[in-house]
Image (cartoon, rainbow over the protein chains, first blue to last red):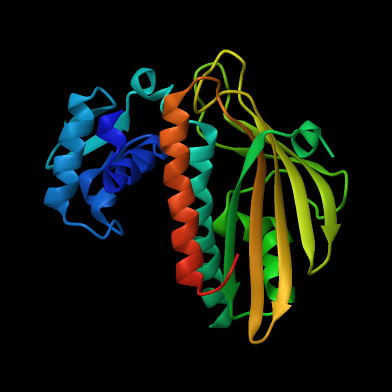
Length: 99
Length: 154
């Protein structure tokens, strides 16, 4: 549980949960922190058994270990992040319509 | 209304933001199937007509196929859209557990645009789950941040 006390780490974890698999580069994009900071959070999450990784070429992909996370991530935390992102996407679509 | 709307002791997520667009334009994005797919998820069978049933396909988990079952509860053009949002499976805990909730969009015309408010209600707190308390503290912070960024009261 302490692993998820850090808000940035929790945000990283929640993004991994909502993706089947996601690369470190994709996780870094839009996160507001550096790739090395993301990598450090990923190491902690992996140590805690919450995520697993897979190397492919020069990329490393992460996926959630659903057994590890089941009791930790409830619907409410999932949708708290989900709707915030949908609002951002809605704003982008409105800007598209303005063009 | 379904059970989620009537239950007491449930919790909700609120996101409230200002958009520099007329309510009519936002309503179109909230209620046109093809446009919904661009910012939310692609709906199957959606019509902004009370009683209409539709679905979204999300990530499956355990015994749950990932389908969100929805039904339009209210559709008042340019003002209010509410739909039931149900899914999950009794064999799952956490993500993928039974979900019986309601999503309500409220559009309020204000100077220079619209205040759009989302209320996702009906979340049931897992019993004796310290994880829930920790995580729900997280989203409350998120909502507060959104409120600050939007520059207005909730």
